[in-house]
Every structure is written in structure tokens, then in C-alpha cells.
Image 1 (tube, helix red, strand yellow):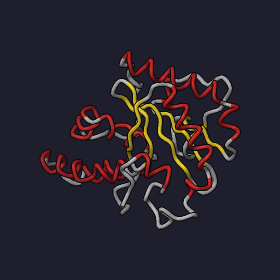
Image 2: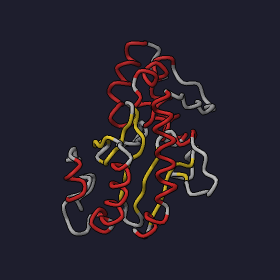
Image 3: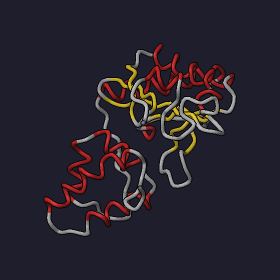
Image 4: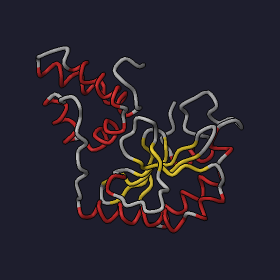
Length: 207
């Protein structure tokens, strides 16, 4: 079962794999760095919750950042990173098909302290944009989204962020899945059923 409590994440893990609550869990390896990132986010006045089984930090009703631990590194991923300026080039793309560089990746806990001023700057900028209600420019897709999907993304910020984070191939798989029917009600039902899988970062053909 995926973690739904913040304290459990920092003591047991995310619950997404069989290493949950075991010494081999990635959160155990990177706990010093993860705790440092958590401190910075909380010091900035962000509210702490759990989304997608990871600690998520929010402000003014908008997701600002999410913490993650992996076998080879730990990360702070910034939401709506296309709104940020990154003169030092610290931000990386989440994957080779990601359209926006918005991830701070670490392999050494000491690097968190080194980059703390920049991290605080990124968070402060995103908090300002959240308060101002700044809209993130839509990326120009190479394929048209069905009207029902556009409406669903506009009405559901969490779904919109998750869909935007999908690789182009996964996005297209969902478009093709919806275009398999011309009945609007069926498309809406498919979107509702797909929500959890999209938020989990999966394409239409993935389980």
C-alpha cells in the first residue's frame, strides 16, 4: 500500500515497491538529505502533505515541490518550473522526454546545504506565482487533445500537472485511448477511470 502519511515516508518509505519499511529502502540511504530538503520546505512556510506517495509541499492551493528518493539519488522536483529563472543551470529534466527542467538531483546530502540559497529562491518564486495565480504557458502539443480531456485538465490541477509530466508518448497513448470512442459520456468515463494511472505516471497501455 502506498504511503499516505508524511511521517511514514521518512521512517518507512513510499510503499511503491517491496523494499518498503526495509533497510534497503531508498529513503533509508538518503534520509539525511531528505530531512534537509524537508526542513527547507517547511522553513519557507509551505504546507506539507502526501501526494503520489511522496511528501508534497503546497502554497496558496498550488503544488510547489515534491521530494523523492531513488536508488541512485534523491530529488526535489519543482512544479510549474517553466516559470522559473535558473541562471546557475541547477535544474535538470526529469527524463529525456521531459519538456521542462525542474528537478534538483543530489547524490550527496552536503550538496543540499550548498544549494540552499538557490533552493529557497526557487521556492519563493513559485510561492509568489501561486499567490498571483500565474498561469503556466501550455506546451504546444504535436497532437490535439480531445475537448473532454482539456476540460478535465482545466478542472483538476493535480491531473493537469501529472498529465503535463508524462512523456509525449504516454500523453499520446491516452489521447488515442479517448479517441477510440466518439461518445462524450464514454470519454468522460474513461478519463475518470484513468485519473489514478495518469497521476501515477503511466500510459494507457501500462498497468
